[in-house]
Image (cartoon, rainbow, N blue to C red; front, side, top):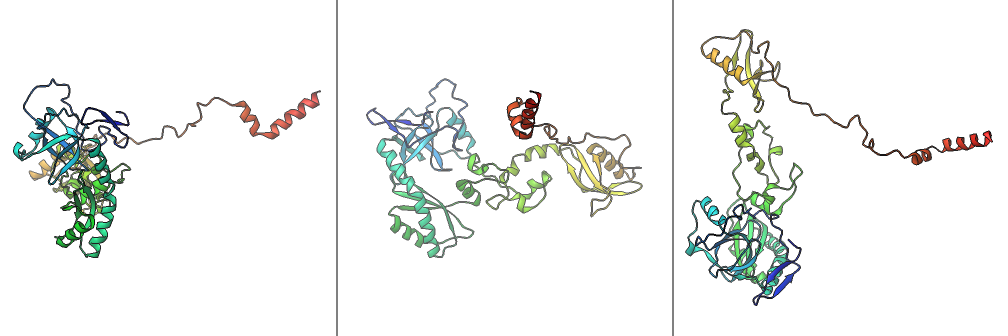
Length: 383
């Protein structure tokens, strides 16, 4: 899409707004319309999804029958006044999105889409967004003066600058009635306080994670699922809070990404809390490698001395014999082997990075000035 976005005015005239840009897919609330190639079938569904700042979005009724596309800036009904947002979903995809909701909203409870945003609406919307940073910093000082145990992490102005939403985090219940009065007198707008969690705050602020990439909560995660230490145990990770915690001081959301893969791989694994009995020793479980199917046992219950690796099939056989009262001769079979993990190597450790460069005789001769002097001396001597 071009850098400038075309907005149709009230009388059909084209208005170019250089300050407003829209690139599909750059916002984490954007949805991929995988049903866009289907023919238009009148389903009687007049709903559209509108997204606002950060993670706020909702369904609205297109009562005026406007021809809306993803990315259009529209004016919608708010309480009070009106708000400005972008269309994030239209068409058949709305029906699929409503099926995911456990309690889909009733059409009568939804607010209306007034019109496509005009130049005046866009200008006021931009002015409101420029006030958000100053308002947030000023509100933090006011809350400190009132000695409230809370932190205001973000402020969102409504499109018509008549209302402001203050997002805050707090460990305990906060009585902010006095704060609302002071903020209303300070900024002359209607105040709404909305509490969020530490994960939501990290998603709004953003940052770089320990993996070197941008935080998942600020790029694509919209629904936060609870993460416990059980997720780390399934993946055989060290229970170190400094490594498992993210910038929000909670367990990292990425612990959920591969959890299902590890759970499925361990469905047929034998129990780990049963020691293995042999004629010469007793072995206790130490660790396992899930995707290799290996259990590591030690003859010392409290250390990793004499550690030995056994495939899960061999562990099942030994546990079955021990259950019958029979001890095996040895834990590991003589012909038992497994594929070792490939060792990573540097493919260029014995090669020069400039091996493909063409030879430069002139530059080589210039590097050795004594060689050039000797050549001149020999030429004069031969003459």
